[in-house]
Length: 144
Image 1 (spheres, one colour):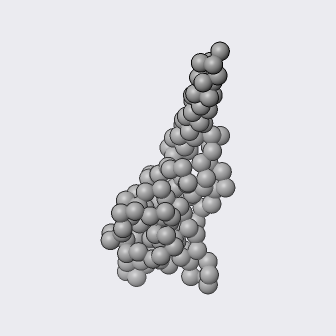
Image 2 (image 1 turned 90 degrees about the vertical axis):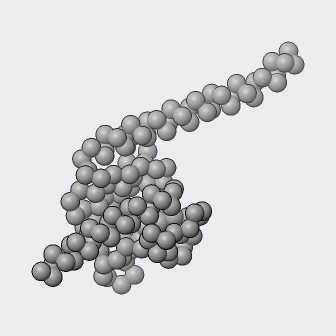
């Protein structure tokens, strides 16, 4: 009986881990279906992000699909910043470790910005480089 009591916490932990894995799998599958509509998309535990043309859509992943979705146009974005631990970092020259990673989209209206969280610095850096390139391309088309 004593051995049974020793194994009980392990059994409970096993079922809890299996349940957590099932929830995460459902999130990924819901994201996969959602991401099909975009040209480029990313998923991590903090946020989903999709780009289609000049529009960026982002939200929070859940097992039933992304929620709190927001969409904005890159045509309205003035600047894109990479924030690492709430400090501005040059895209392409980011540190290796951080606790908080965000891409910040700044709009012309004062104090108006959108911050999209990321779990990995290289992924945020890659998205920042790509979207800055798109933004520069849009700016040069507007001037021409």
